[in-house]
Amino acid sequence: MSNSSSLVAEAVWKAIESTRSVTDDQLSVLHFLFGKNLERATRIVDQRGVKRVLGEPSGRSIFQVVGESQRKEEYLCFAEQYCACYSFFYDIVNRGEQLCCKHQLAARLAASLGACIEVKVSDEQLALLLSKL
Image 1 (cartoon, rainbow, N blue to C red):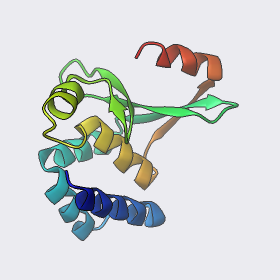
Image 2: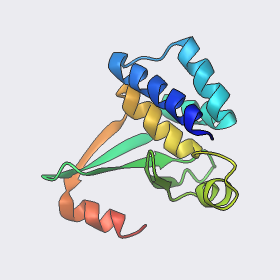
Image 3: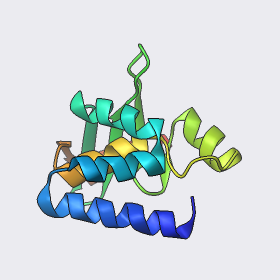
Image 4: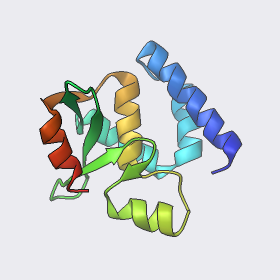
C-alpha cells in the first residue's frame, strides 16, 4: 500500500475514533483500501471477537482477536504492527501483498468504535502473555 493510501486510511480511522461511529462512506473508503479483509474484520467486531488485554498499573495493552475458523483460535496482535496469525507472515511479511491482516483491522476498528471487550490483568500476566509471541 502506498504512503498516500496509508495517510487516507489513518484519516478515516481518526474520524471514526472522534465520533465512535462509522459511516457508509468511511466503510467504502476502508473497503477500497483493504478489500475482503475489511469484510472479515467487521464480522469479527460484530461478533464481539476483539479483546483489549490491559496491563495494570502500566497501562500497556495488546489485542486478542478471535479467528473465523471453526476452532475459534485467538490471535495476539498489535493493531498497527504485528499479528501472530499465519496470514500476517505469509501475505504481509513474506509476499507484501497486503498492509495488514483481518485481525489487525478488527482490532483497529473495534478500538476506534469503542467496541473492545476490556480485560484487565496484572503487568506480570501481560508479560507472560507476550512471552508466548
